[in-house]
Length: 317
Image 1: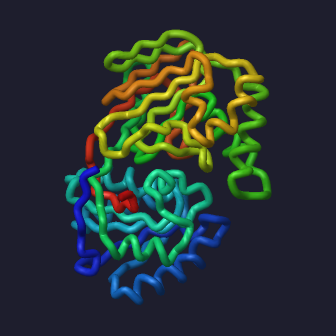
Image 2: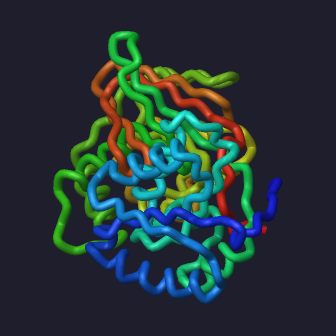
């Protein structure tokens, strides 16, 4: 891993907070974090992303105005919006420095980077100013051969079962919160989901058949702590593809726990993996995709790795 150190005290940081995250608790937590930043003489300006998509709009505008130092205080959803805003702004993304103080429920991206569940410790990590050139993923959605949509991601894009769980969670959100939201959606989805026939192509990799689930990963975790891509490295310039072929219910239930540890890579028969800079996915039936919990339009997909495209704070040694 190649890192560089930035004197974070020399810059004014534009903070993006979603006040509605964690059922309205994020803004209260930010008040604690802002005090810790001020104690370390770190300069900041607050921007509140109150509605879906607002984080993207704020980040794009800030970059267009010439700002290059952004701080996300929140979870994976806010981080995803800010990353997309940076790339949609059209600026040279290698000039941008992005720091994250994880305050969301899942914080899957933060798990790969070893951020602790402690605000004071995370502010200390920020104060240290260790940044890495982080890979970014890009998913392009095609319908009838024409590009319909594109979405950037800093963690994981999921297709098939993974995206169906997100669809279920989005449309059947229960009153209680936390990782149980995803687990409940997973259990509901596994009882009704049917594997889809797909063609998946990457340099040195070709699969045609029924697929239960696949992920294209920059980092290792999604779904509230599932280590779906345990070998992913966020600055190797490649996507980690993990494809689970059609499996029975017993196999799914037998391996749920192993997906959280990453052991499913060895325990599920027929699982396919590869590392590639681009992946093509063509499905014969409607096939859902998602990035960082945000559903993509249905269609065919092309996933690309953008090597070391953004300077991102890390706690990795």
